[in-house]
Image (cartoon, rainbow, N blue to C red; front, side):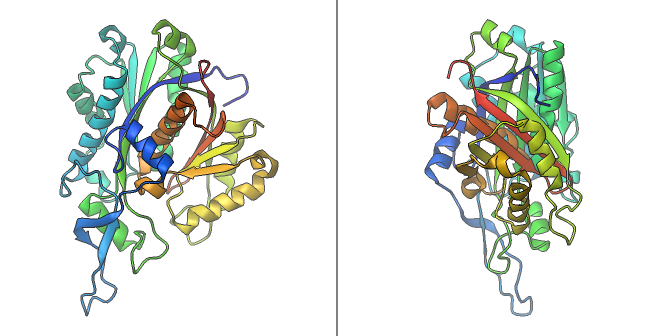
Length: 356
């Protein structure tokens, strides 16, 4: 959805990651290329040779304020609450605004570990209550992993433009350093280690984004940090679990819908170091040709945060919003894209806010 679409604006952000107790700190660390990759304090990589007990440290990217053995839903709640409080401390909504606000959570993709975490509608309600957001008009969750945050933008757009709500808070959160999830990913040979070259560094994080129509932002005297002017979705037939490489079909479809023939100069994505995603992006660049001809900067925050899954999309929105607001963005035309482990592919096109 792009042509003739009414823009929605980002007016606030918050977050937490291994490289920042706030989203401001995280953005500064990404800009500087800082990471916190180090041996996990508890987990060790699977054995190359079980007979000899050959175990090596597992490199991970953990939020330092969380206990390493904090697990599952409790870990996600701590991340989500920290991101929400960072947003609200920076730009608190008035009490009368909460009744006109929707709160959506992009959560980890369901697998044999996360399905035991109780990631249903009760999960965001607990976080909202702890954050003092009682009386929200709508609360919902999406468990699509990486692409979930951008997928929720379509629902957000519909609610805002219909007048059903005046404000929407989008939160993405994920953790790959939960001990059970580490074991699952390690078992599947997906974690980067001495025995797995084609893998990712597990990370965790959360980001919260406040979205409104420009008119609502003006009434509330909130500055437009960035404008979302297009978004798109697609489906990839050759998913990560298949033996074949990606065809790039779903991501190409999503980017074409989001860009609507605009030419981005800055691209952000959620590639995490696994070969599958790099190959997919290469195919997409071939398919799109002139659409990406002006791209001169590609940012993948996983280089600094590690793999953050469902937090990736909202985190990118925060990175772009801060860069535009602070004046160091390399371009005022920005494309962000995400790709889930399943078929889901999503893209968002952003531009500078009216006051930037």
